[in-house]
Length: 314
Image (cartoon, rainbow, N blue to C red; front, side, top):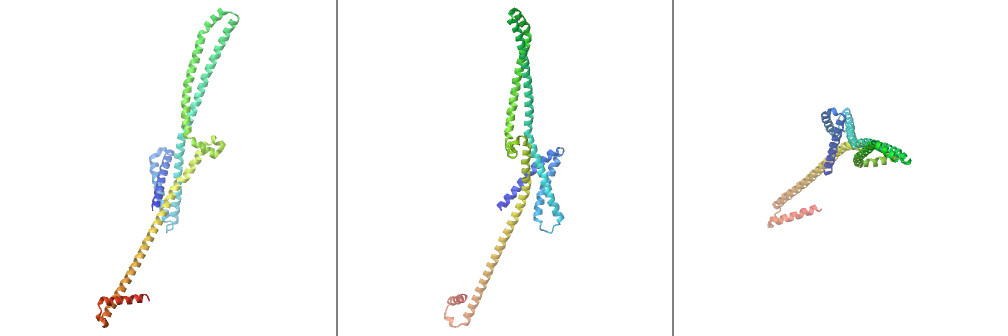
């Protein structure tokens, strides 16, 4: 009985969880009617379990085949609908987990482009400063020091502008690098959470796992839904089978106890009849046999019991 109860509770718990996942998944597909979807899914889930139990108990009875066929088909369709809802729920959960990863990748790519742009600004400014230095070197090589100093004074404003651009670009690169580091750290955490699916993908697709993560997830989800709701229905039927066997065993024990009781009562009746016959014969013998008048009634009874014992032993 304990195993029957455990099987029944397992079937109900799996069915309730499957129904919850399915309702959430269907509500995601039909977001405009969440409350009706919840009501419909709950009613259909209860109806599916009741139909499975009723069909098991009445499969061999005089129920129209059309009714049994419809209920059987309805159970299969409802299992498919529940599995479809579970697929939607698990797929959404996977997408919600992977979505930040794709968003972070896009942000990191944008940051890399911005860093490259700032590096180009620095590179151009440094090239410009290099050209200015080469222009001064011409005067120095020709020993026109005074003219070179005057030319350097003319370049001072341009040099300051270029150095300022370099400093601003360097500060911007530092800021962008910090942002990139934060996103990379968050990305590593997310990839660590979805890391197991990578091993599953490698197990299924081998070297092509990098391009087949989504297919691997769908494969795992399909395995789950094929054993989720069908297991609940089959466990419920198994609980009904165990309950019927337990009732049969209980009725058999009652029948055996009744048979043993009747057998015992029959023995007691026979024993009472035998005692009654012995008592009657005793009274007749006491009345008819005068030679025993000198014997007490107890002595006569003992003698009579001995005679009966001899007769019973043949």
